[in-house]
Image 1 (cartoon, rainbow, N blue to C red):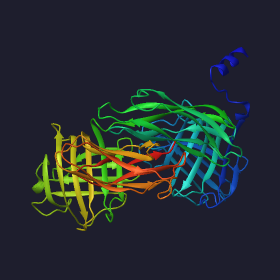
Image 2: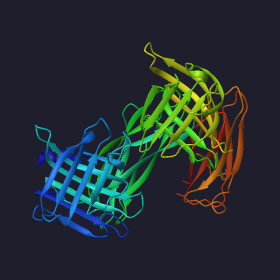
Image 3: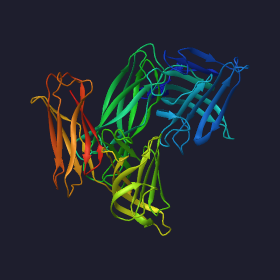
Image 4: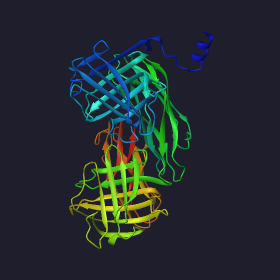
Length: 518
């Protein structure tokens, strides 16, 4: 008893008895109206209704299968970690369709009774115990699935020889933030409940150092959140500190404590800070309005997917990027020459370019050009003695079918780059202004253009702030520009955004900053 008291005084949480029960095996499905898979019904299946099997499947995943004796009802539930990892007790946020998910994302797919869908959602593994032969001995998972990303949810639980009761558990998902060149930018982290609760649930959160240091890499942040009855996810933001130094990518934690109304499932998780100022691997693209390939800004980093480089048959370079979608970028010099640093104009669609012309093709997510015109500039193409790509750096401009809207992009594989970013706004209550800063790093020897525009959040243009759009030009050597947005009748807690678009002369890194009234 004294030991238990010491734990409580030290701030440790003890899971109450209501979180545990005798071992059980079951599947529960709680479908909201409009959910395609569950058809708006609540269903529970136990071994009395039919056999259960639990098997391991590709990429470290687990499948739970059930069917009634006459197969009038049958269900499969698949849960998987990011590729190369093992499924462990954790909160898995941002899950995508299992077997088709990005290698960097978890996979989830609950389907049955002849109904399936493309999936977005989350799941929490409360218990997973492996037998010596690699089979599953015990399993407890709660999940939330949204078909095609629509709002109606299918909530559910799996218990296999598990004593974990069906009660709401609070978890924190892994997060990611982009480091800017100055000021701060927002890292978003999702706190979630494993299932809806009929009563309010509160929990405290706080950041803690790992390799990232509060005050240098991020702003120490703590607070309380309350889940309203039926609410299962709350986003919190943590400011990431920007500078122009190459500090490297780092980690810190978000930790949960002092729950009321539920127990804690996943107590702590990582937040990754990506530093753009050193060696990077990424694809940054902006599709001008009307471009078929990319609708606006697209940024894919090495934390979003896997980058694979290869030499193509024209002695050029192909880079494939596997996220939820597959993307590819192909470059070739004229006349099958080895691709090297230089400017390549009058490019046509690879590998169908005319003799004597360079080849270019950037495509993905099921979208590609039948014909294209464009140009690209290779800053570096380094190969090992066997001819394999060691590092590659190229900027490109592509026009599908010869139309005017362009796809502007930058590809880096183990290379440095120049980038545009926008900070979160600094609020001056006395002057009633919100000041965003647009930065370029490093400076350019030529002009760089970008457009800035405000976008509503919970704050509304014309009511809370004055809508502002500005075209910004960096002259050679310039690295910083400020945009001042007048505040009208700001209300505490409301938020709007400053967004960059139409870059020319440099790709974008952080394309949106926030302005929050305190």
